[in-house]
Length: 543
Image (cartoon, rainbow, N blue to C red; front, side, top):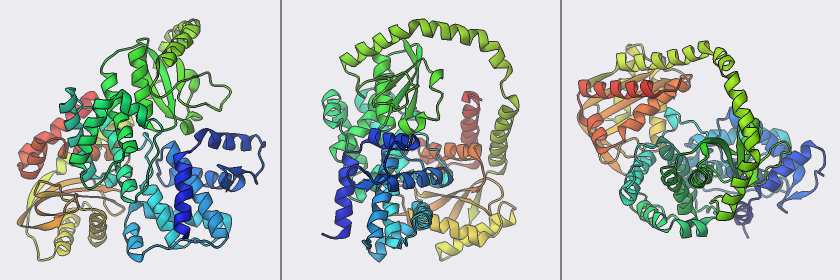
C-alpha cells in the first residue's frame, strides 16, 4: 500500500490503544538507566528514538505555546518518532499542493516547521514540506490541555458562538441553567475546536468509556447527539466524540447536586472531561470532599502532592512517594466504598494537618506577595483604562476594494498614534481573515482582531461603513458587513491584557441581545456594556 496508508493504520492503532502508563514508565525507567535503547515501544518504534523525540518536544512545547492533553502529546511523540524512522529508510509522504497551501495559512504550520527543523538537526535528516503538512494536521487535530490560555489571536468565534448555542440547548433540555458556567464553556471550546479539525481530516478518536457513558447518561447522550446535529450540521460526530462531550456536561450537572468538605486532587490521563466527571461523582458520593483540583499524569510531577488531603486517580501513578487510590472514571459502587475506607484511614493525618495549617495561618498571611498582587492589579487597570478611554464609534468611507479600505483604516489608526507600519498591520489582519472568515453569522458586523509587533497600544474601536459590502463569514459563507469591530493588541500584551480582550470577545456572542447591541448599539450603550463587563470582572476577581 501507499506510505500514507501505512502511517495512517499504524497511527490509528497506536491512538486507539494508547498506553500512557507504558509511556511514562519508559521515561521514568530511562531516567533510572534500566532500559535498552533498541527495545521497541508499542511494538512499533525504538525506545531510544522515542526518548530523544520526547525530550525535544518537551523543551519545545512551552517555547511554541503548545498546549496538548496527555494522550495528544504522547500520540504526537509516537507520530514524530515513527515519521523519522520512515524518513531514515527513504519513505516519505506526498501531499496535494492545494492542501499544503491551505495548511501553510494556519497558526500550527509555523510550530510544525520549527519542530521539523529541530528534528532535522537532531537526527541529521531532511524533512520535506509534505511531512511538515502532516505534522500540522496532527497538531490541529490534537486535544488541548485544560490549562490552555485563550489568546486574542486564537479565539475562533464561530466555534465559540455555536458552543454557546449548544449549552443553551442542553440547558433547555435538562432544566439546569448552564449558561453562566465559564468552566463548562472553556472546556467545551478547547475540546470542540480540535475535534472538528480531527473529524474534517477523517481522524477518529478512541473512547473506551463510550458504552458505559451511553448507558449511564442515556438521555443526556441523546440530547447532545441532537444538539451537535443541529449546531454542527456539516460534521458527522461519531459516538466516541459525543461521549467525550457528555463528560463535560455530565460533570457540571453532577456538581450542582452536592456540597462537600476535603481538598482532593483528581488525576486522569484522558483529559479534562473525565477528570471533571470523576470529581463530580466523588462530590455526589462523598460529602466530605469540598474542593477538587484536576491534573494530568504529565503535570503531576510539577505539583506538590503533599498539599492535598487525598489523591484519586483513574490510572496507575508511577511515582513511589505519592499515596493515592485508583478508581474507574465513572466511580462505581465498589470504588466509592474503597475511597470512603481510604478517607477513614487518613482521618488522623487529616486532623493533624488541618491543625498545623491553622497554626501557620498568620505567618502565611504575613508572607503574601502584595507587590506582585499590586502589579497584577495595575496591569489589569491599565488595560481597562486604555480600552475605555480610547473606545470610539466612527463613520468610515469605504473604497471599491476591501483591501484598500482596510489599508486606509489602518493608516488612520496609525496617525492617531496606536500603531506603526500600517501596511504590515493591514497584511496581518488580511492574513488572519484568510485563515477563517471574521463575519459574525446572523449579523451584519465582523470582528477584526490581531496581535502584532507594530501595535503600540491596546485598541477597541468600532467603524460604521457608509456602504455595506460582502465579506467571508465564520461559518464559511458570505455575509454583508455594515459595521466593523476592531481589536488590536501589542504582541507583548501580557496575560492580563489578553484576558480583558477575551472578556469582550466572549461578551459579543453571549446572547442574541448582546450581538444586537454590538451590531447596532450607540457609543453610549456599548460603553455602558463595557463598564458593566469590567466592573463585574473587578468585583469578582480573586487577586
